[in-house]
Length: 446
Image 1: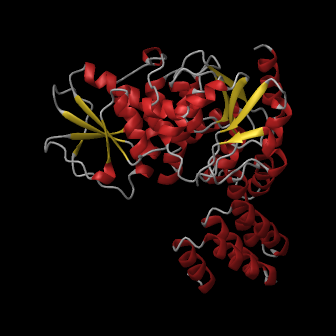
Image 2 (image 1 turned 120 degrees about the vertical axis):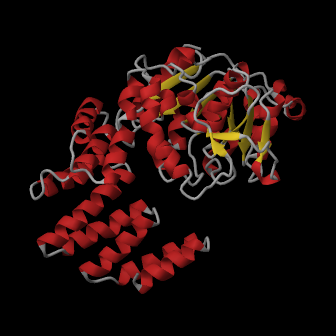
Image 3 (image 1 turned 90 degrees about the horizontal axis):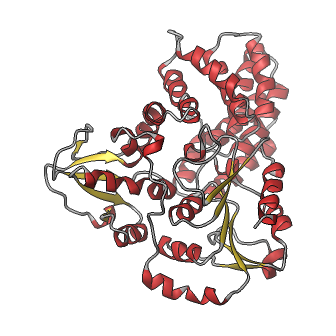
């Protein structure tokens, strides 16, 4: 590890992210050689600053003089372009590299990612199936290929096969640094046995999967939902889903088993037709009282969420510009309420048009009740969509081309929720013009 990498990663580990970026940028401004630009680009990439990795990777490529330098830099850029949602640029570099190594499995896998991001799913799946049959794949590419094939089966409504592919990498990643002392559930139903459902996943995933506790109870087991989100546990408990917060260090019976929350529908062997699409969550009564004043607003109350800064490295795939929202929603018949958190407020120019609930400490039980007071929720693909959908609220979801499986089906609708959910799908990377037009038509029809 060179000194720049050591200092950068040490600062980053100390949560000095701004200082880390300033250090690398300062060094990048003074860079003159291929190696210097390349070092900065690689460190930025490893720290998931993909736009910066691209900026300095492109500078390194211009200075690369050897064939090997050009090849390696192009491959690094391909990965960065795909991570930052520029598949058309990645394809250009892929074609260059394939002239040198046409059968490189890493290149072909990255090509499937490009095609998926461009909406060319049939081509992407065809290449993935060809890859999966090759005997010379590295373990890493083999796992990624099988994982990405889940999309094919989700689109065919084959939930069980899709989840068998999806969980290979998802569960491994979730538990690479986590150990649970209880025995892992093997899917066998044992009457009265306590099963700990470990919610090592996003908040939206929790909301989406907590319903399956009902299935386990009906089968005679004793399910307990284990979450890191204390206020989400409060909402679940109120709705009859026994939940605990792991930070409270709850005690379980010694013979308890555990299961990854996202694996529940797989182990329960459910089909898409088994998914209950009726509302199953309600807000806490005390929070309903706190936000009851919103009932005095007689306009159509619209809750909006457009951009996540939750730390999810691919949040930019599912983020929409606020100005695109306001073009559609700037109408006196609407009262607009921001459902964003405090890290992403309404732009100053539009603050007079939107009522904000921004607070760095706003909890999930607040969010449930605020959403429950809305007549309509318009959101990107985040936990807000799942919260609104689980309560049966009318919700419009902007779905990126690389959609999450909750929004994937052969019908274009979601199997996981009812007809209260309306999906507006992205057609081109980084562009939301078509789905915004569809939203406008939907609003005109209200």
